[in-house]
Image (cartoon, rainbow, N blue to C red; front, side, top):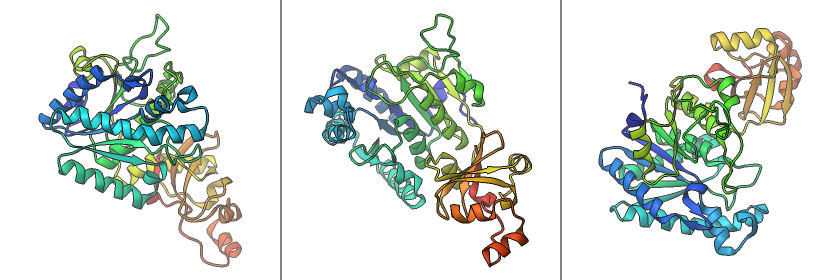
Amino acid sequence: MAISSLEEIAKCRRLVVKIGSALLVQEGEPRKVWLASLAKELAETRANGTEIVIVSSGAIALGAARLGLEKGGRASLADAQAAAAVGQIALAEIWSEGLGEHDITVAQLLLTLEDLEDRRRYLNASATLARLIDAGAIPVVNENDTVATEEIRFGDNDRLAARVAQAAGADGMLLLSDVDGLFDRHPSDPAAELVELVETTDDEVRAMASDNSGSGLGRGGMVSKIQAAEIAQRAGITLAIINGTHEAPIGKAVEANCGTIFMPQRSDSARKAWLGGRLAAGGTLHVDEGCAKAISNGGASLLAVGITSVDGAFQRGDLVEICGPDGARLAQGLSEYDAVICRRIAGLREDHQAKILGYAPRSAVIHRDHMVML
């Protein structure tokens, strides 16, 4: 049965809880009273039978304060990496001490974008999470900002949390924010109304998101939370955004029934959920109207004859996006050819492809088994 309320999410089988820098850190120091209240809530939730995974920001903010770096450690990539190296130790200590008060062992996992984009490394991370949970520990996950660069990073822990939820096999997610949830316009507008339930994340819902972050500490705004919700929805995971600024924020949100719930749109297979959640596409295949309809309506494989143009320099097996004539993203999947060959056979039928290639072409450029709709 689908989870459809904040109370049900807080009591689900396996829950991922994401906490941002602005909630965790104030003027370079941890918010100890707030942290103690949240740790107590998480311990009680776990004691009631819900397995917990934490995705926690805060390393750069903590490290920057200790090193005396300007702009919260974000003046340069080198500063951010140095701050993270110091701050990860402090962040681990915070969670270890906070949950240790409730006799809970904490484990730290530092992940990069590539750890969850590569299928083998993704499965390794999934196995590690499962083993830690089975052993009774609470994993605390953060992006490995000491080695991540601007080109290969999640960029925010909202989307990281959604990918971790997939890898952990979670059925619920809580994103703690500095607002009550998604509003139909910017929360500062007196006429703004809270959107309590989102069944389908469409262009209208995306337009409601604001990309502003008032703290200056975090990287994610409401846009990143919407993107996280879309990843979760495709994997059959219910996601909720709640206000995390209060002490004991989960209980307060549940009691007031105040937040935004994003219902799952479908429950893809494990492999297709991984494909749908991948973020670093190597290129784009643009297709004609007939091909776009066939893919959208029938889940057909992508044939070369329907391709109108190719962007990028991807290799065989890389993730590529499929866009329709209007430029809208339709799907993404693993290409059977590299970009050079895709350009050579684009728009050609199978017999013409064979003449160009000098060998029998593959059945599809992207087979439907290696493709997921967006």
